[in-house]
Image 1 (cartoon, protein in one colour):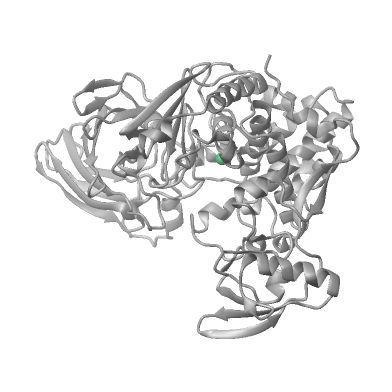
Image 2 (cartoon, helix red, strand yellow):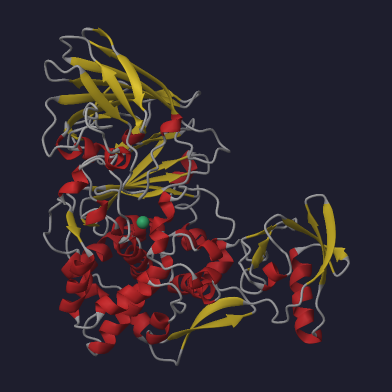
Length: 632
Ligand SMILES: [Zn+2]
């Protein structure tokens, strides 16, 4: 649509003029579908691991006679689905030209933009930009440690407004600490001493091609042009179990078998094994940025609960990067995005992440089922369902990116991931039932994502395209189904897909294999019973709105000091719940909230319980068949 190329900032700030007023100056130039004249050089100096500052030098050629230039810091980031550009981390900016000093002012209506007044005859503008990484403890991600770094070009550069970033040529390079290895999707790597330079590309591709670099690095070939590029806090993190690498190869084979295409010539899993660098899982067309715990590869079996990450980000190469909602395609990084179809982009990716994790052996099947059981249990008593739809939750990243949400079960943040994933399971089962088991969501995947094998050109879609592809697999009222499941509040908990697939949600006194591993033995996980978690020293967290714990006042500012007059331990709280189940006498707790101690009763009588998915009957059912490997 043409109006996507018009700055919304300008539209929002336009005011009616009375006759005689001068014509208004647009806040930002309108983005033209034209190539930027000339190639922009961008070099990032990433050698200072003590201050953790990245210092960028940019040389931007300008057309003869240019006196007014607007440079913008990337604001709307497609992979974040939000105006999440970290301009507050830009700690210094300076502009000069080949004809002398350049004066600049921030654009009042768009503080991510800078208006430069160029001297007469200037043919290029030089930018110096210092981006300072947060230090540990900050709310945002640490991007540099003394052992590794994560270079994200869109956080460390500016671009000229008014030109399509897909047709803006750039020549990138980076200066690295002595002896560090580097990996990323950029082509034409040439290394000379500390400087690594890359072939010319466009600014959109550059922003989609971050680098990981570090002291301790190892690379594995996973087949099909896919490589695992791992960096560790320490060298020992890179001693991988054979089954970890085998699962990586199986994941690649399963994804290509499922989607029936590849939309990359090569693909890098950038994987930091760290508890020092800030956590990330971010998709790109030919790579992904991932962090896992330091022992993820060396203790593969002990970390399988967390292993949907690589399947998730890899799926995005098809769902999100190659095929993308039209509202998430923009010619610049300052046009507002429309993220309402994230229940396809993220929701169906959530479906495929656990399917591919199970098919490849990245996660054992019982761990996948345990993870689904936690989701099913959570949604079964989620208070916020009554007011907010899955689709409305797609606005969440725009409403305070990474900000705290004290009660997600009420505010219902980001349910376009896991709830939508369970709705896609229901879609799969409707197709299987209607076609007597002949077809399923695999067929949709091939039809929708598997087209144009080898093409990287983004293929945008609208809601009607999703419905048309589903109809081609199995004719059904998909419009009505998706509009109610995704678009309406007050929908039932998304258990229909699980039940149609031959399983049911049940409760047991032992944690399922996922919960046990993900919650460190689950001794403090009372989510299924009281609707809270409690740390070893009694601090309450993750209180679910309207749960028994919530009703008793166990909110996240509370510390449980004593249980039935004895000092708090997790085991004593569990024993008290079990005793109450038999005696029907409510346990008494002493809690501390701020400076005040209180005695409260906990009238809950169902005992300690954890969610499980249990197969109905002994024979393999639909969900089992869905999780069976597809690779030959
Ligand atoms: Zn995702």
